Length: 372
Image (cartoon, rainbow, N blue to C red):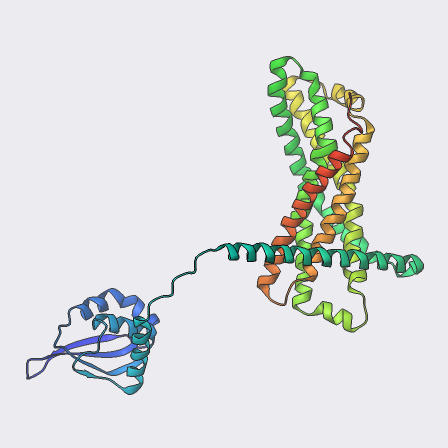
């Protein structure tokens, strides 16, 4: 890369001559751009331009010269034909006005809504198709029990279940402490300290435990499932399985769905227990409630039906998170942009579905396990 140089001379006739040499490209001009612009701005109307020593010229350098000339060709110029063609192309494009951005109309709004609805319907149909294929695979495995992918299921249980226990325990313990601390501030004002057991027990066992675990698992394990299947789509491993006659749902999707459905109730039980422990510790320090009193009172104020509801929510949420993650993973196109977009959509969709299904659970079980 040659440095761009501007050499000024005065001819015998008194005319000023500017000789340009070197590479007049964006990369070469950038370090010296301010000085070159000052030199070009000092050229007068009768200046003779000599561009014969320019070795390289790109559109940036051509635009720089065209603006320095006042958007018209100098009266005296020495230039090669290939350089003249480059500057001419820049001059032609500079004379064309930029197109105005189109305004947003009612038809655009209708088109956006239509595309959104059709895209949503496409995802729903593919999701139902995946669910139906899983049901067919389960029916096949019931008739051929020796073909159950037990190794894949156990490996997925280890990854989505056991490996998730540290982070869920940490978050659950902190949530229990925070919830107990905030509740203690309000209950102490009314002299209702002992009711903190009711608040923590019902809130964590019935609602907060399953939802909290589901959000953590959707962000941790759900995104990992989508990314794994997406990479297999990008590297054409899924197509290779199909070419060998191996069912992708039987070997890739079913183990993940079964593993997460089995592991989620255990994670809910584990996280709820640790969250209650955090609440006990906070109540002990804040309200001076003995831990033994907390443990003795908890079964009396929180019926066992709430635990069953929490475990059922965990299984349902695990099933839905795995299905959504596998659905988006199998629809990744062979490029990295599609992989990142589908992974993001998987996490967002999983959390949204978990919240919607939790609302349905709350409506369906509103009369179960709630002390009156």
